[in-house]
Amino acid sequence: MASQVAVIGAGPCGLAQLHAFEEALDEHGDPVHGSMYRYLWSNGPKECLEFADYTFDEHFGQPIPSFPPREVLYDYITGRAKANNVRRFIQFNTAVRWISYDEKAGRFAVTVQTRDDDQTRTEQFDKVIVATGHFSTPNMPSFEGFDQFPGRIMHSHDFRDAQELAGKRLLVIGSSYSAEDIALQTKKYGAQSVTVSYRTQPMGFPWPAGIDEVPLLSKVDGNTAHFADGTTRDVDAIVLCTGYQHSFRFISDELRLRTANVLYPGNLYKGVFWLGQPDLMYLGMQDQYYTFTMFDTQAWYARDYVLGRISLPSREEMAADIARWRGRLAECAGPFDEIDFQASYLVDLHKDVDYPSYDVDLTRAHFKEWEHDKMASITGYRDRSFSSPCNGTIAPVHHTPWWGELDDSMATFLGNQT
Ligand code: NAP
Ligand code: MG
Image (cartoon, rainbow, N blue to C red):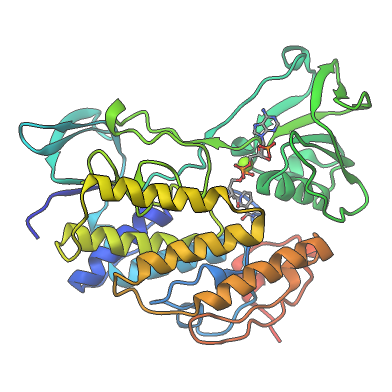
């Protein structure tokens, strides 16, 4: 392995990449740390993100329910990282400030700032893998009257503790996963009412009493919110669940991925390799049904390219391949098509790498069932059970219905299972 490879980020994508390399090297060791916020439970079945080479059963030593809280998923992710001792490859407190490609040297120059001693240095790398995620830079629209609003206004990125909003009349703006999750969570922990304002279309779930959907906010006047249909409501706080921007301020212009949150960004061959310079790779930059499984498959693919086990076609062929995928994406008519689309993408990557096999068709069926479950009961879909695509284990039913479960600790989640 003669290449110097920079992996930027040590979250799920970055760890998947280190793990993929480690799998090719075969050694073992210590834990890796990260961070999340309170009361966040998985919003998709865990069976649809199960690591094919490290099952939930293997990690927990017992079958666990399908929708774990974040502490449980964190334990699972870091459990695999620990088993493989990838921590030794991570430089903590090191911020990447700039990456450019040096044509003459045929290498990347990566400038980093080490936070502990505030030193800046530039190193050369043959390959760069960007695994910094794309749900961290808030997309923050403004609305008339925000400057005079007497209550708190925040983006979902800054949302930490639902209890802060107990007793309040909340306005949530957006109609995707964050809006859904934060509306439910704040109501669960005692918000007086939650009004969800959509731009394009309402989510349309059968909301519990105290949550409902209205058209887009047009302005706020004092604490009165005005909506596009002419209705008004008084609110105490506003959470903008308006999504995130792909932001890579540390990458030079010609290497920087610019994309909306879509299932197949342009300029990434196989969804990973930067078209203009494929020695630059991006992991997990797609919008996501599949998460960890997709990151793993991408990481395996990137690894095999770095190790010379996979070679890439000409730039023209790569561009044509991207265009084919994006053409197919343009024909997707809704969530079911999108699930099939992303599953096909995973299968396409998987056929070229030795990532262990699992039942992809089962995960597709799970995702579609999950969509139905959410429409049937938005407060109850997390009480359903799914089967593992890796070993067939059927998840036990959680001891407490999610809507009534205020404790999201791992100890409580794993305890008292039937
Ligand atoms: P997202 O899926 O990209 O959705 C962005 C939302 O913002 C869309 O509904 C969009 O509306 C709306 N929006 C953007 N600009 C707007 C504007 N100017 N005015 C009004 N609405 C605007 O982002 P997200 O919901 O934050 O989800 C990000 C990721 O986090 C997802 O992968 C999700 O699964 C994950 N997540 C997971 C959990 C969990 O596990 N429990 C919880 C929260 C989030 P339009 O439809 O009109 O474009
Ligand atoms: Mg959000």
